[in-house]
Length: 117
Image (cartoon, rainbow, N blue to C red; front, side, top):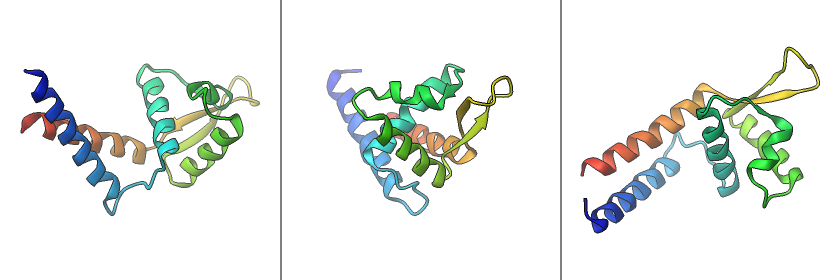
């Protein structure tokens, strides 16, 4: 596939993803929440369990206080949940919800559609 076709595919994906984010069932993420959720998803994809205290390392250019506020908003939006570690009750893990899985599945569909055209 020529480079110009790759560019066109990516631009189509951006348009489709933007339409998804503007739609009635969109989770209403700001840019930092989107970055944070994407970083968490990349870690979850590898099978890692992310501790709340580790989340700040995912976005080193953002203050811990801001990260923890955004975790709360992601929880309020139903995109993450917290689970207490059964071995150490002081530790909490950040986990995706079915709503998160559906959101990323929709983005995956956008990518598939962009590649087809």
